[in-house]
Amino acid sequence: MAIPTEFFTLAVLEALRKVDSNGDGVIKLSQLVLYVRERVSILAKVLAEKAHDPAFAEQTARFGSKGEDFVLVKQLH
Image (cartoon, rainbow, N blue to C red; front, side):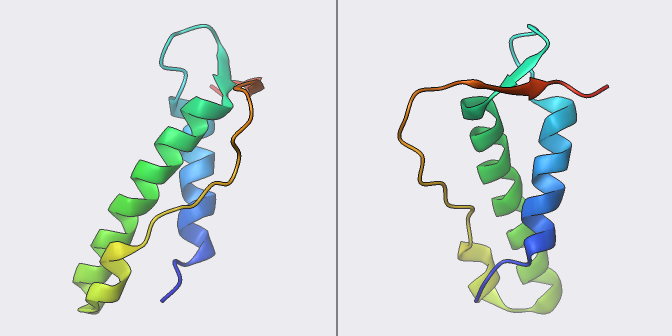
């Protein structure tokens, strides 16, 4: 069972406002990936409970990048 794309989109939009964990004013790929993975997992578990479908609870966001970390954007306010 696939995660609704809205979960991924919501997690990315939230990350653009929240993930500047070191306070430097920019969001790096590693910060975004960490936040999105965790948030999508949480959203999937909530959906699993509401839909009474445990298949959703095992869903996670998958990322294939194995390159170096880099700045994506300045953090939104």
